[in-house]
Length: 481
Image (tube, rainbow, N blue to C red):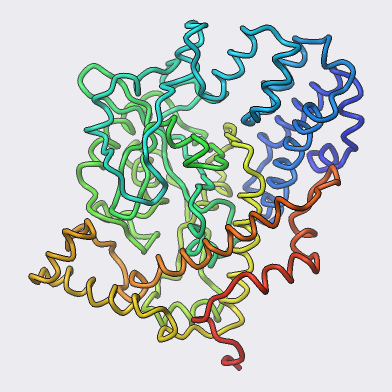
């Protein structure tokens, strides 16, 4: 049914305000209620992009070619915008201001995390309204012990055992599958099967500091695990798109245990773990954070379904001493029968998502069909490996390097040094290709109402662009028989 609704000409949805609201609500509920454990991951990825494009296309029409009913049926218009669950472009907010009263505009802004002094009744709904310089997978000077000193990060609309924010009700234990705004972040997850859906996962918890409560997202980064304010994690600078998955057996007792265990985890975890299937309490991957906290609460954890299984990918990874082919990936939460979709946060960054998907998908193809030659990585990779060895040995040189880089022998990731020495280089090279692809995508005309990722990826001009843009000298052609 969802695919049929998304393929319906947009003119039908826009023919009347009531019809438009009905379509938005139907598509929203149909996507949310999909039985994902019975579907193929590639189907879900296809529907995800079709849905993203449909919302984007509808918002563009409301702004650029508004239907006649837009200026008269204000209540239904508000319901339509509300139910789209996507961040509204500034230009559309400006247009809507011509038709809708200021109170409604500020309500819509509060729903996307923008507070207003003019209407204090929406203050809690809008959340903190203060951002921090925290980026996905990168160190920051904002540990929980520091940002929790600012009481503004406890300003949310609390309800039950969770909070209402960005149009969703978040409960402790909710898993966030995030497409984060770091170009090249998917270099690792793109190599496993089934197909990738998001490059990162994390878990929501409410942390206590004294008598104050702070809604936070517990996630891994390059030096271990940390807590990020919920509003920061969901901001446009941090995430492009996030889907929220909830354990079907979750209750308030589980939530309280998860909140306590999350605080303990922040104190215990020492570093990142490249073995995503290992239940190590001291070194964790992004997926094991939620797994461990669910286990602490007595919930049946998500089971791993992913595996790095292609022989070509395995052979190349072995050249970097990587052999953890049994893999626990974010998509495993998506496909697990114990989890259901609670909603999503769409930050209206379609070209960003598409550029990453295209480049990372093409990278996977190259990793299968070409031979990895570690000697063709830039010279800095050898310097990196030399430095990592010294840090692990705790030599005088290693301690000096650690002070500069912010690592010590405990916080270095658990995994092969050969991979650790080159992964940031690979991310940077893919990141440059993604930036070029994003700029190119923004020059295209997406005239069709329906978007198929599979069909778009096969277009000759798309293939030509990727072949000329993705340059990875360390993946050599014609070496594998």
